[in-house]
Image (cartoon, one colour):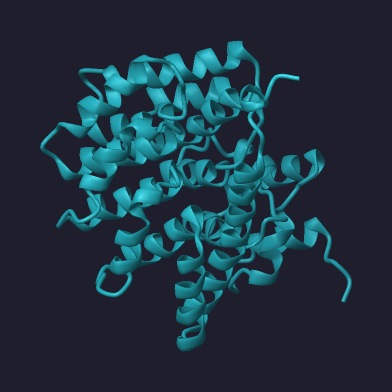
Length: 321
């Protein structure tokens, strides 16, 4: 079957007499400028419900296929008058590296009237902090993003959800003041702030948070415990391995259980491999099977990295010739 033209897709989008075909959803990936223009021209005539349904379905589809990119569509919808469209447009930009979007993203993070939009914009900005730490964007661009997120975190008037999103995003930064922000969040008597602090610790690439993370692995709050498990995985804490292995036998929260599997795949080790393989052999749940297979693939990569690190020779340790 030949690929339908984008005009056919747009005609189907405007046809309210029938449901929009799901098979057309991937055709919104990698849109050419002329197709984006055609969509935006037609967009005002599409009902709000249909627009929202389309964006929701694209957000659901996006993580399932790494070949899909809805960036051009999402960028064109960042100024949409419907806040739910703006929120979902931002969710389609989680992997963007387009620094041309930064002025608009910064404005959304600081000035949008919607709290949800501000949260999503702050999260997208975290992607650029991460890129900046890898020196994949300019130092000037990184500085603008960092200053924006720091203003949001330190704001005395901003809503807590937005501040927490900004904290999680700025935590990729190596700037010295970030540690203080994380520590301050960790000492708040609020599970949501504590979870954000743990998320930030995991993203910091700093092992000095090890004891704090380990202390939260058995927290009674599901959100906090899950964040600690993820942080232990992100920092590849060997000291968390046995606790996580034991946790898999008794964890009742599904999200934390899956986080534990993934964290173990990031930490590595032969006992982890045996455990995950046994779980794979014993389950019949297709979703769990797929997740475990992905985790074992990630474990392969982790063990390769660990083996390389063991074999690596530190030049400072070489004997004098």
